[in-house]
Length: 321
Image 1 (cartoon, rainbow, N blue to C red):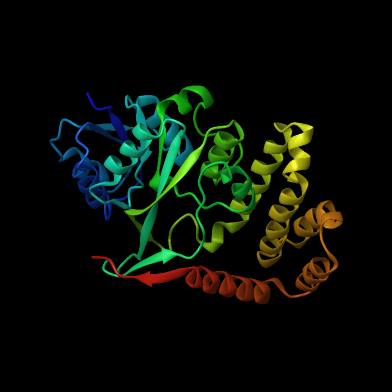
Image 2 (cartoon, rainbow, N blue to C red):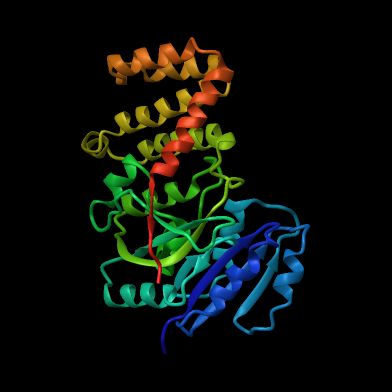
């Protein structure tokens, strides 16, 4: 019998999107699936929409109180019965072969613990126009080192073996946001290999009201610092040297400093600057001090504008059949 794959959906007030996500999950060509929806105490029509489905493969869970994304993901993991585990964000869409392609890969390649696919991005309100991210994607033995440089794996494109969860446990909620980055680093640091499948198997919705918007960048950058500092405590001395972990922590703190300054938190920014100053080159030290002299409202306008422009430049339009 083909192994069971669990599609895990965490939703909170997603009445605009949840039906499209669920329809895409239930339309998978891979037949042995369970779809588990955790309703994180929604107050809109999300509950009504999900309960309207009469499909034996669908399980509905409701959190008694709002627990948030990280704990919601862990509740889904504890409820899952599948040999393979994969997330579907409630505003994204699986293409019909997503689960089949990833299960087939992992069945054929037992040397990999997980796989993630490429995505076709679209802006909310423009569902017929798609983009690829310009960044490079990595697989195999270089994933850990590359993840120290940047985050390039998207949770909704990812599938992993249940054995990984049984060994490592779930997501941590004590380090702040970007918990998926921490999980992928923890996996690869433990020796689990992740493959990249260069196929568009997910349509990823870009929303300006999402958790990645600029207003939450301080929390996101601080979480990244927390994750890297925690990782350092779990590395051997030779690993710290090999991967130059202090440099990567400094890189995370540098972006945090710029974000803090743009949000008017100068004292906190300069305190962090003193911590990281020995790891910064002269040009970067001058840049940060120059930024610190700019009024925060003006600096935020400039930084946010540059941030949004850079986000747009990261995408190139593609044709989708």
